[in-house]
Every structure is written in C-alpha cells, then in structure tokens.
Length: 107
Image (cartoon, rainbow, N blue to C red):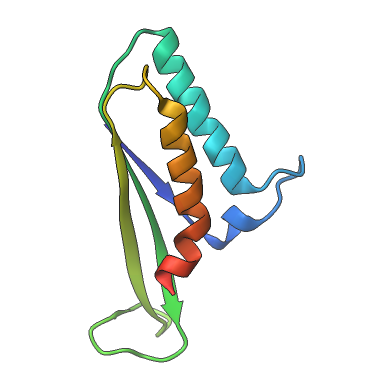
C-alpha cells in the first residue's frame, strides 16, 4: 500500500478549528495506523510526500504549464512501514519532521 501526501501551500494554513492542515494530515495517518492495529492488519505501507514548485523564471528542462509558468514536481520517499503494530509512532514522528522540513528541501 502506498500513502501519497501532497504538500501544498494550504498545508501550513489554519483550519476552522485552529489546527494547521498538516497537523490534520498527521492525525489522519495516526488514526489509520490505530485502525490497522485494531483490525489486526499488518500491511506494508510506503509513505511518499510530494509537491509542485513554481519558479519566477523559465528554467531549461523544466515543465511549463498552460499559463507559461515554469514548475517542477518534487517527490521524497520517506519510509516503508513494515509492521504497524510495532512502533508506528516513530514513523509518525519521522513523517512530521519531514513535512516540516519539506519547504527547505525543495528550495
């Protein structure tokens, strides 16, 4: 199973309840892991974060959209959770850390 997490500008904005959207994503993943444990499931899960970076100037070799904006899609393979019953919280810490560092990674 593969979990793709798209990191957009909105992930660092606040939701109506005061939480940042990336925090909501982490909570969603936590609930997924807990549900897997409750159902006695042991899927192997690959977690990948990705985002699209737009540039002010045209860069040779990069993709140009229909509006003439130059962009590049960036992917980062974070981890593979082999057995969610053992230590899935350490994976959540890693995912949270990588989400927080993703803006620096793409710049």
